[in-house]
Image (spheres, helix red, strand yellow):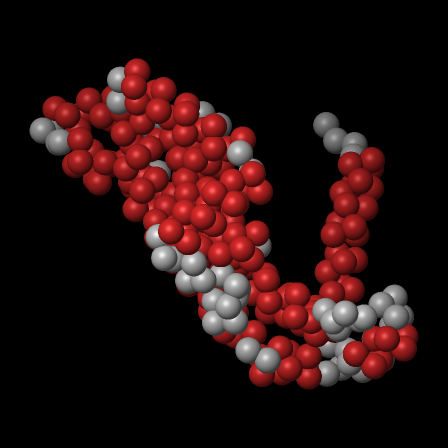
Length: 272
């Protein structure tokens, strides 16, 4: 029996793909064009020249330092997530205490609190700790905001591990730490990859916390440094687009390397 092609679905998918690709094309096109040519011909004209000068100017202007700061904050955030979230999720899944369950629900309240609401108290706390205008002062609150959703994701993944596996490990004399290290972690690779990619995206794309907590040129991150391509009366669009491409490439590589484990983790949360 032949299946009829879903014409409407194909048209909708094609239109959606076009909506996504047009801004990407305009960004790439502008990045390789000079400011003079872009200002003269506009963003919708056909490419008239090819230049790498925008990337050279961004690098020579210190944008690599901004990318390095973003990378340090991202690596620090992911490290904290990997240290805290897996054992925390395991304890929540295996605990039978009402106190643990209530504490988990209370922690999930953090999902409903946007960073804008608590940015002033966070700034005051970081300042009192003497961590203002430092990368660690950005890493700590960034990781704190990512922990609730990462814990929610990983507990969902760990709950798919059957009780019979825990019983078999218990019969073999495994301690809770042994179960966690030898069984739970290997079976939760998909969920762990998911929280790594999520926390890396959150940290790399962060804007508000770095803007408030890291205001010196030495600690400015890439997302905040993009503002330097705007003057009082004009915006250097080609230079800005070149910097945006430099900002996108590292986190895109992280996603490409982890995409299989990420998809497996998302699919694995649907059920056993």
